[in-house]
Amino acid sequence: MTASTSPATSSETSVALRPAHTDRVPLPGQEFLTTPQAAVFLGISLRTLRTWIERGRCPAFYRFGRRRLMWRRADLLAHVEGMRVVPTLRPRREATSSRASTESAARS
Image 1: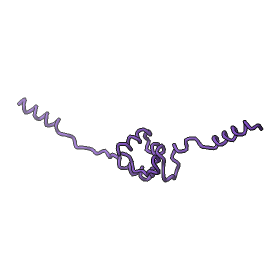
Image 2: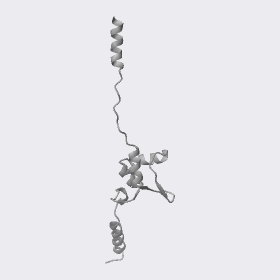
Image 3: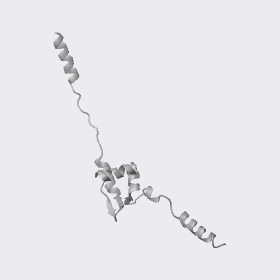
Image 4: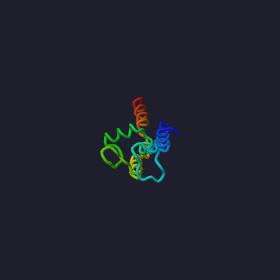
């Protein structure tokens, strides 16, 4: 083996051993999620989550250092539950029937 191939082989090995994009997919049972993982968990784009952060509409998060944000899975679930909308049936307006009675009264 030559000296020029040894460093290339060792750097290729170290690159091959590092998993690519492991922070992009939430792992089962993982308590804290990174920002990309939180976006995947919420089913929104990373840009949307960053917009929510800027506008103060995002779920609670933890700041580690200056730039690293971490999200608790329970906080994300609570935020999703808070966004839940339960449709209710509203009683029909009687404008149609009152309009018909008004028209019939006008004809008489």
